[in-house]
Length: 413
Image (cartoon, rainbow, N blue to C red; front, top):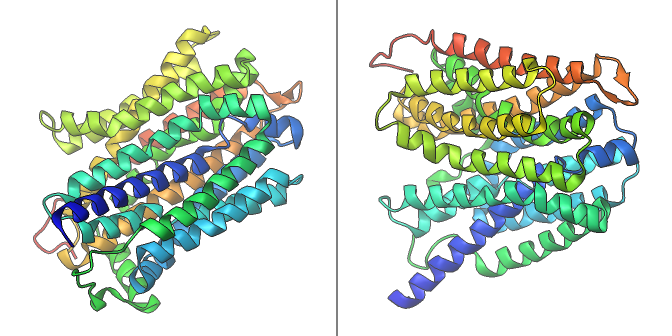
């Protein structure tokens, strides 16, 4: 392969992986802007919305180990495109479902469909780029994928208001089908002369043993509990609470809600870059403490400021987006506490903990919100204020556990 054709192939690989990452984020956060519409059209309660959003992240968490095995055995191209085919079915079912069970099934299928997007992209990039270029390419993949979060706010809300949310998901199913064909046609697991190691083909038992070894590590619970809430609290507000809160409290339409959520999604996208720069002047522990306290303070601000004007509430929600980036530092910090031969599996386990936290906090917030009496068929301001307070308590409690991590020893296994 000539140098020019190699560069062109690498560019096409990167572009298709970025496009897939953007689509994955759209499908993941697509219920945020249309939550009030689901409550109106399907008769959803707040706890039902919590289940609908939480089950997506729970499914992704449960899929981590099977996806790893599929990628090792069949490669990123077949795994990513094959899983996205399931997402096509999920989006179609979501577009036509009239019941809670049908919509939940659709979200499960969409979650399965995008579960290989991040890990699969990293494995493919590892084959196409040298070790010194890989971190930058992986960061580009993750950061660019966050564009999907932005598209799932104001743009999706506008499309939903213009065409209806069912037609939006019908369109997403078509786009996902095109993505399946594009990935299968364009993506290649490695350059022609790149040997793919057979040692990566591990059995399910070997994968489970590696994960269990990570969970037996004495330091694991401290990192798991912090990553369980760090970014999931922000995601909970962005994908579950934010839209209904703005609708019920300020009677904002879909487009106006989308604008606020778009701003929050933008700050969430910039947050990892911000914390990465701050690490030049502060330690990881200081930044994790600052991020946790900052997130709790914003949640308390949303809960305790009586009769806050819309501009202040919008500002607080947008500012909350900045807090999630310290989750990346927890991953960075955690790598030092696991033996080298478990480095990959420890990161997978941390990712499982993060996805599980996204599911659990969505469930908890939706259930807690439903404990309060409805006002005119919708949660009251008191219910939302209490739920934001709950999120603040969750973040601070996790940090109090994390800060008690034992000193690092030479044998961390």
